[in-house]
Amino acid sequence: MRQAALQTVYELAKLDPRVVFVGSDLGAGTLKEMRDELPDQFFMEGISEQYLIGFVAGLAKEGFIPYVNTIANFFTRRAYEQIAMDIALHNLPVRLLASGGGMVYAPLGPTHTAIDDLALMSGIPKMRIFAPGDANEMRELLRTSITDSKPWYVRFGKGGEPIFSPENQKYPELPKIYGNLQPDYLFVSTGIIVHEALSAMEGLRQIGITKVGVIHIPEISQIEFDAWVNIYEHAKKVIVAEEHIPRGGLFSRVLQIIHSKNLDTSKLCSKSLPFAYLHNYGSQKDHLTAHGLDSQGLIDALKE
Amino acid sequence: MKVNNLHEQALAIGLSAKAIRLRERLLEVTRNAGRGHIGPALSILEIIDVLYDRVMQIAGPPRGQEWANRDRFILSKGHGCLGLYVVLEEKGLLEDLDLSQICTYNSKFGGHPESAFIPSIEFSTGSLGHGLPVAAGIAKAGAMKKQNWRVFVLVGDGELNEGSNWEAAAHCVKHKLDNLVVIVDYNNMQASGLVQEVLDMRPLREKWEAFGFETFEVNGHDCVALEQVLNMKSNGLPRCVIAYTVKGKGIKIAENSSIWHHKAKITTQEIETLKADLYS
Image 1 (cartoon, rainbow over the protein chains, first blue to last red):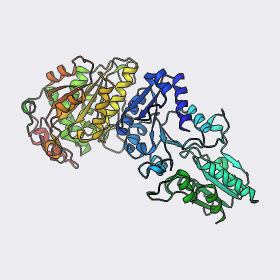
Image 2 (spheres, chains in turn orange, red):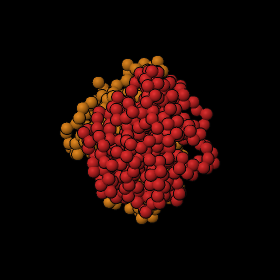
Image 3 (cartoon, rainbow over the protein chains, first blue to last red):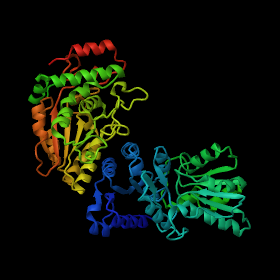
Image 4 (tube, rainbow over the protein chains, first blue to last red):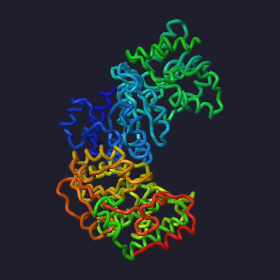
């Protein structure tokens, strides 16, 4: 997913001189081709995220479109005020490309696992918040970013995720509703958890439970609830699954929307990471399994 | 309290008729607000006035055709905005916006400058340590687009406690931003006391020079000296001008007074007392 994103930035940069890539001491090979071919649009800055965000805000203010890449937490926690004040207050078209969303960096511990990023970014007016589910969606999403005037936060998965989105279909039209359109059971997810939800749907089908649907939400900041309000109303149980703490992320947003529509919220359940610093290591998958966010965990949650 | 000869000169130097007029207007504006950072605005008044009057190239009005080619100014120590507001007003750069209602509910002018509704405010500031990184981005953009305009950013001496300034300083040199000038308002006071007691940043000149800035020191209330140093041609490096100033300059009872760093519930009587204490 990261490779698809960075390659797309390179594609965009070739077409539009306003596009610049800015990294913060990323690996030496990062976008080597772009660095060689478009050196004036490629910046590798030092480990200094507060400066970095101010710097790209200055570039954006003067007409450039910066795509900035570092580890998610070093945006959301380290440079929160700069993102809120330098970028969002001024409504500047900066794209924060956040590596290691969720538990991708599980082996590196709680300094590196980004499990509160969606909540933190949700506290910033004007910020658009995305968590694509595969490389195709990432690519299409970023292609549309060139024309949007708002700031963006884009959460990256680990990479190598299965592809479920069709290729070369423009981002907003990409399908987000899967499975039964009048389901008894509905999974609502964002980011790479869509794969666990789709897998859970298949697992349930194999044991004869076929009226299951999956809604994938790639943009947390703008949930198109009207597109699936009928599906929601029909379902008996709705599980909102996210690789995130239980507050301030997808569940909070969905609950808020459904409450505002005076719809039944009692069928809504949350499956998330705990609201805690996670001190276990292992892999991302280990954590999804431990906290019931893998496909089996979602099946179990539905049966509860 | 005096850190060197230039600081002594800043204390001793008198004020011109224009400097008095700007201060009178600043006090009038503050009377309506009933609050404000008077001391930090008075220390930077000559710096901002010289920038807008004798240094920065601003060919036309905000939103005009030539506006894009203006030199840029960011007041990183946003709490000194009273000084910026009165100079912009004097220069006719506030359009028809009403400064007299500052800090009231519907005013476009607050206790920190916001660019959203005031086109001549380059960038909204308030939280410290933001101006220099943003100015670096603007200066880099200007260089990339081969523009001739320059970028001036005014930071407080207490503000230099913020590490983001030093992150940015290193990068300004990396990018050889010779179109960028950092001006340090060295009034030697921050909210809780003397800079040298709260967090001594000395040797300040050597610090900027060590980062690679071409660095100058000047009496920050001497308009002639300011004009000279701010108009100097660049030699390929980013530039730092350390301006020795006096917090509350021009009003004896407010000079070097922590009471007048920021004050709420300022009475009309207090404003009259400050005005009476203005000296030339």
